[in-house]
Amino acid sequence: MAIIQFREALNQAMCEEMDRDPNVFLMGEEVAQYQGAYKVSQGMLQRFGEKRVIDTPITEAGFAGLGIGAAMVGLRPIIEMMTWNFGILAFDQIFNNAAKIRYMSGGQFKVPMVVRGPSGAAHALGAQHSQSIESMVAHVPGLIVIAPSTPADGKGLLKSAIRDDNTVIFMESEMMYGQKGEVPEEEYVIPIGVGDIKRIGKDVTIVAWSKMLHVVLTAADELMKEGIEAEVIDPRTIRPLDEGLILSSVKKTNHCVVVEEAWPFASVGKEVAHRVYSKAFDYLDAPIEHVNGEDVPMPYATNLEKLMLPNVSKVVAAVKKSLNRL
Image 1 (cartoon, rainbow, N blue to C red):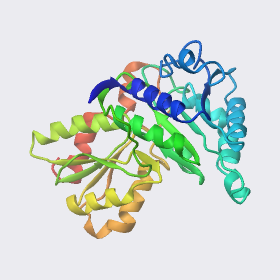
Image 2: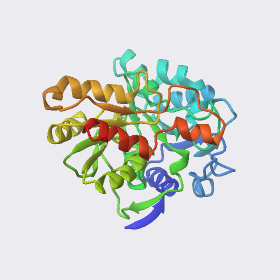
Image 3: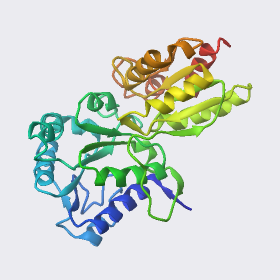
């Protein structure tokens, strides 16, 4: 298998789907002439031309609305948000139109659109550019929400998202675009709603997604030095959630820790915990532990930003607390 960057895997997914289906096109800020703010669309303008790789004004609500209209008449737009922090401006279009038109029209219209871009903190971007908003979009019926963690998962899931007849919110991470991983060279897709066991273990189940998965895998290595075998579950899709995979792991390990970058109140992690408590309570030997970002706006200062975010030591401490090994 080829070893490529996360951004290259996403680029391959879009190019392959645009080759396969002439109705697929890419639209967003700086996706064409500048070849993407994070170079995810590198070379696509030259390959597909200006009618299929389209630069937009700085109007997130405007081009999200254009995408919805295009999808309703049979096209399959990929809308890139330079960051999901800017994508908040398009929530009216996404929540009130993209998510509801298929239902409100009785199935006469569908909105097969992917809205993708980075979510969460990078480095020293401040309070308005560092938000993890997956719980906001996952709250809305009619939207699919995906948050991949590896180049291979990113490519396979983006291809599935582009082919899906519903609106898909695709959450990436600025910090992951340069990460490398093995990606199959042959054609493949990954089904939406199917999670993955990234590490097998017997003592505790740790659930994490997007770039937090890599924090957790490092923590699992540290825990192994003390004889603690963590099973790491990557949901990959936030909505619909592969609760069966999570529950089966918890029933085996009898302990659960959820790790996410987002704020703790009403988070996706709280939904995961609710489902485990509701359907596997009798299997738990201890309360579920949460590792979240701190419940404050993101500081600009790098030392304070580091304190705000989940890290390996916080994950290790949460696991030991769950296992009563502090």
